[in-house]
Amino acid sequence: MSRDHRPVFLNLFQIRLPVQGVASIAHRISGIFLFLFIPFVLSLLMYASTSQEGYAWVLGVINMAVLMPVFFLIAWAFWHHLFAGIRHLLLDLELGVEKQPSRISALLVISLGLGAALASTLSWYLL
Image (tube, rainbow, N blue to C red; front, side, top):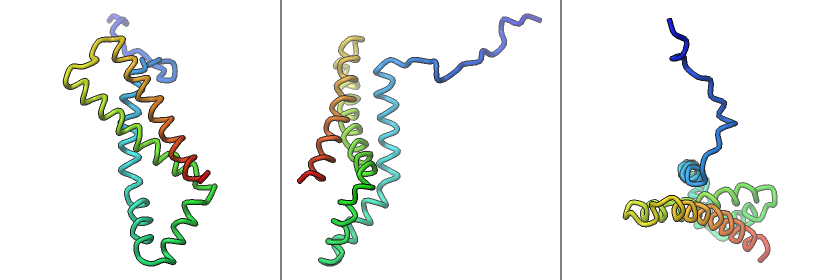
């Protein structure tokens, strides 16, 4: 019996995905994060709309520095999912399908998502 057809052990930490793959996987992860954060965001919105005390409490929760990474993650998930979704729609229209434009658009999506999340999070905490 030949040993050439045995399964090969793949170390997933050694595989380097192209930037297009990273953007695509991050698009899926951001969609999962958005789905998981729906109850949290809706409960804050509902509590803020009940009364002035509720609104003040929600502002106090949002301004907690401990929760800044959570709000950054929500902002990143929103912005990355938006930009990656637009990129996927353009790819469905066969715009930017070639290797180099696809690589540039993936880098643009990743950088715009991180930049917009950083800007929106910092603008909330600095204003």
